[in-house]
Length: 235
Image (cartoon, rainbow, N blue to C red; front, side):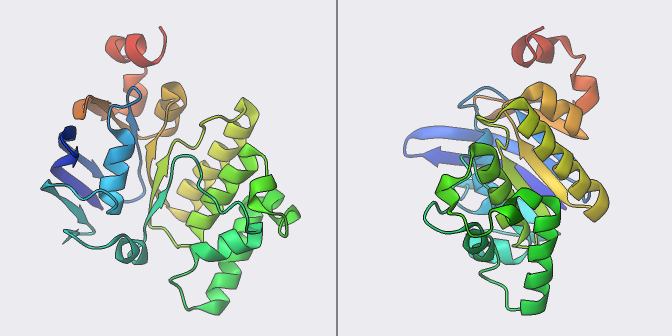
């Protein structure tokens, strides 16, 4: 479904991504783990079209994306749920969710998808008229994921969904993500600071260090890899 081939990304003179290659198959959950500043979020942004690679290629459903704009990538179902949630604080829950459907014209399906989001996140329905900025951190993360679902993702690029949240809220959110993957075959490329959580959730994993992939394989097997245990699992 997604093929990233030898991409390089620069921030000015900083060589942030140094030849990363990875694949994501339809229906998979794939995770990228690594230290802060390793290049995980930059990789997602490159795939989403926000930081275009200077070299290499990103192919989605067999189509090279090249310089395709971020909105056009959204239209193809390639959706980024960003780090830090980035909801619209001065808009209501309902308005935030409707922004996720901004590119869509199918009003009946939009209404059905809105109810679907409320089914997965009933707390959002309870706060439908509440301003986004007044929600708790966990509710804002639910809203950010719900907004992404309103864009009809086929591949969800999910950046640090557990950041700053209480463990019980994280458990709730990942339970819902698991349902989306199983029940709707939503494909997920996950960046997650909690390596133990990510490796238990994903099918496959890549380890990124200083802008390069240093290890890849079955996510559960990585849980017992001594290098991963020492560097990321605190063992």
